[in-house]
Image (cartoon, rainbow, N blue to C red; front, side, top):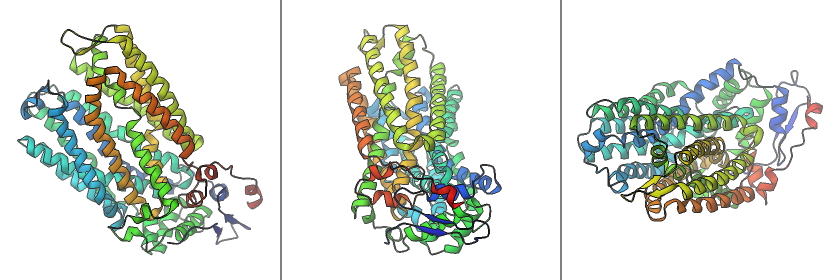
Length: 535
């Protein structure tokens, strides 16, 4: 595979932009120069077409969000528990297997997701994932026993692994480089596009008698995947995938149509096209479904893979789940005992987190990925310390041994901290969870690398599902101390190891990761004084 060297791109039509030579390197100004020569408009015809393509891919994130909120809601239904014979007092050992089988399906699907996304393109990968999700939904919604329900959950998880790999890969590869941060960051933000209805729909259907109370929201699980399946044939294929298949003319046309207002000679189009040709191998491991060596065979790609794995684990273990472990007790302590009201407040919590995630996606290019994660995680450490103190003083054992809140005022304060935590965590981590791993990976290993990312996300999630409940049972609120120390460690790791990926094209990042100190190279200020001279 050819390594990328300093890029020299000359605009073909010099009558429009005379004396233009766009050069790239470690302190890349190439993207800044190209966008300066032809400033992209957010509302041009080509950008509006691009938004439509990206919107279809973002539905894959909605799929994940809907299921993530749905099962947490219907698990509290008496209708659901009675039908499958779950013991409400048994907790995780009886219901946890339903969560676990979905995670197992996701883990198995992670090994198929990369090859499925590489084989016939990102569009086919999204369609294939959606097809499995629809099949899994039908099996779940029509089942009459727990075995059938779990079979549907496995198929669903398998499909989600493919869609969660193909979706973000497509968005990052199709996004305009000047706005890649916002566009790709919004991908994971759309988790709440499914998560919010996944909370509010069960809130309403919980009042229905019989099995339709939980079958209806499960049937609706196929809405987002159905939309992907319908519209994905009409979106453009990733130009990077086309380059990898030696379809250069088609790739150039896609870049012109979606990034250059139809002009093949636009500076940004020429920059991207030349960099893709130089950086993307036509004989890379993406052509061999079994070959994962390019995730580990050089120092450069090992560093990239390390960041992908760290991001997967940190995103799940920063404490977004455990922080609300005592949430039901706090609601009861604040006098909120009605199950319907509790479901409604859970929906409001999702809305607050969604607002934080949108805010984070919109500022990520200006703030930078590193700074965004550092600031968010540092604040999370402080919030965890406050939550720990509130739990230490307010959570006591009731007459039957279950935790209760002794002060309504302190309970309300903790509820407020949980909402604030959700906003801060979502502002820093939600936009970056899909975006940062995608940016860290080379094209040849991007799909398989995102499959690897999905694998470790689910390993971490599996731990959260089974270990967190046991740990809280044994250690109580003291378990929060672990997260204070863990998140402090995260801040240190991010500071010393995380590369800044903003303000460069995906191909320009190769020069950064090839440096002896990638972090230092990524923080090197870009010299933009030449831009005015080059206009």
